[in-house]
Amino acid sequence: MRKSIYTIIAVATVLLTSCATSYNVRGTSSISALDGSKLYLKAVKNNDLQNIDSCEVVHGEFQFVGLLDTVRMVSLFMDDESIMPLVLEEGDIVIRIDNAVQSVGGTPLNDSLFVFIDKHNQLTNRMSELGHRQSQMLLDGIDENQINRQLNAEADLIAAEEDKLVTKFICDNFDNVLGPGIFMMITSQYRYPILTPQIEDIMSKATDKFKSDPYVRDYYQTAQENEARMNGTKDMDDQSAPLPDSTIVQPAAPLTNVPQP
Image 1 (tube, helix red, strand yellow):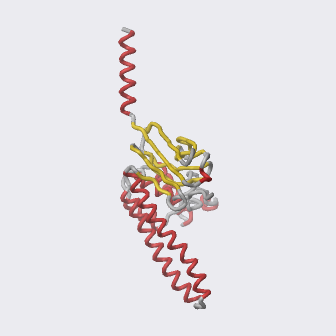
Image 2: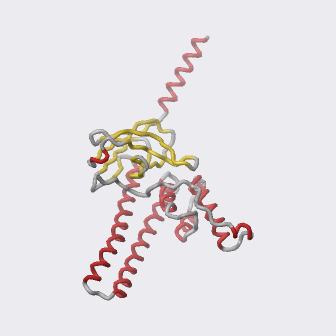
Image 3: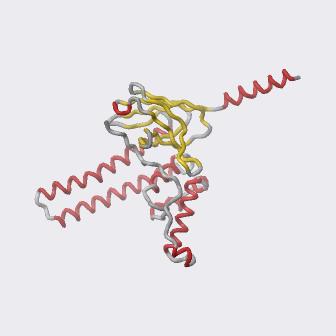
């Protein structure tokens, strides 16, 4: 009888193990500063940024392998510096890091994420270029007021494109980890949770699954309370208290941020 019980337990263990999925992240880097460094995969859990896995860069190569209990969005870190976000999902995930390109691909959600990041970075570069153009136009003797009018108008157009890109991407991914993950990134720029027209637009379209995500739910609830306090619709004791910093852990860097040698 005892032997039969052991056999059942052994069979059950094999079945459970075979049902578990795993992640396999393989990376290459041509940046010499990364060689010998310790890399970490970190994710927000229970309002805390926790290590999921770690490995060392050896001769420009590194690898993370482990069991996957749930698909989740994580960040690749070197020490305390965030390099890039990625999605831990089943399949062979490939990371490439060099001075010209930083990318993750090989699986559906990571492919989608880095198409978005590439478009977002293009807009960021266009915005940064306006500063260089301003300096050049001043050197060319163009009237400063004319420069400001022209470049401010271009900046407004780029900002509108960025708003549309981010909003559409979140809405298209309400029901997977990318939607809440990018929402966390765009709200990390604020000192405390606030409501913006973009956030209100996103939440007005959101699915129940997106609204029930712990980060989204806590951020939106706190933002609504802060909005009510600023509008004077809460009691005087609440109004007299300063607005709190967000207690929700934010990622260190929203997009790719590769250390330079």
